[in-house]
Amino acid sequence: MTHRIAILGAGVMGETLLSAILSSGHRTDHLVISEKREERAAELRERHGVEVTGNAEAAAGADIVLLVVKPQDVPALLEEIAGAVRPGATVVSLAAGVRIATMEQALAEGVAVVRAMPNTPAVIGAGMFGISPGNAVTDEQLADVVTMLESGGRVVVVDEAQQNAVTGVSGSGPAYVFYLAEAMIAGGVDAGLDPDVARELATQTVLGAARLLAESADTAEELRRRVTSPHGTTHAAIATLDEHGVSAAVVAAVGSAAARSAELSGPA
Image (cartoon, rainbow, N blue to C red; front, side, top):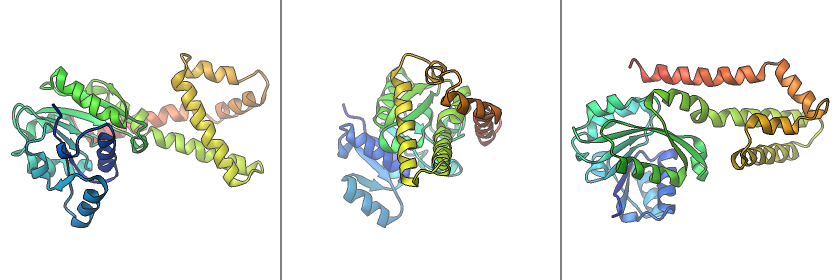
C-alpha cells in the first residue's frame, strides 16, 4: 500500500523533498504539501501536480507527516496539527535542534516521532540525512522513513544524543567544502588562472575527490598519503596547511557547530 505523505512547509527543502519523493515513483494523489500563500500554492500545483492545502488539513489522514519549517516555528506548528495527526502516524521533523521529547509531548499518544538532520545537497538528490527514532517508532515505520528520505540521498540511523555531532559533520558540512573550494579558486586566480578556469578546476577536483573517497575502500588519510609524494608539490601544500593549523581548525569548526546545535536544542 502506498503511504500518504504530508509535507508541512513549502520552502526550498520542502519542495526538494516533494520533488525527490515524486521522482521515486510516489503517486501524486498520495502526497500533499502545505502552503498558506496562494501564489506559491498555485506554483506548486502547476509544477508538481499535487494537492496544496493548510497544515492541519495536510496532516489529517497522513501516514507520514514531514515538518520542514524553521526550528522557531515548530511549537506553533505542533499545536496547530496536534488534533489532526492520527495515532499510528509517523511525524518526521527536519528542524534543527528540536528534541524528540518536545514533539512527543505536543502530539497525541500513539504518534511515532523521528528526528532528522538533512543537508543542502538533497536539492540534487545527493543529501545526507541523520535520523533518530523515538521510543514509539516501530521497525516498519523506521524503514518507511529511511526509504522515503533515500529519495533525496543517503540515510544513517543514530541515537538522538549524536544528533549534534551529525549537525557538525554533515548538516553544516557542505559549507566547509564550499569554503575550501572558494579558497582553492582564489589561490588559482592568485597563481594566474582565469577565474572561470580556476572554478572549473576546483569544482571537478572536489567532485572527483569526493567520488574517489566514496567508492574506495581506503580511508581519507590513506588516499591523501597516496597523493602526497615526499618533497613534492602536494607535500609542500599539506605542510603549509599544517603550519596554518587547518586540520585543527576544521575539527574545532565541527565541534563549534555541534555545540551550537546543543544550545539550540535547549536543556535535555
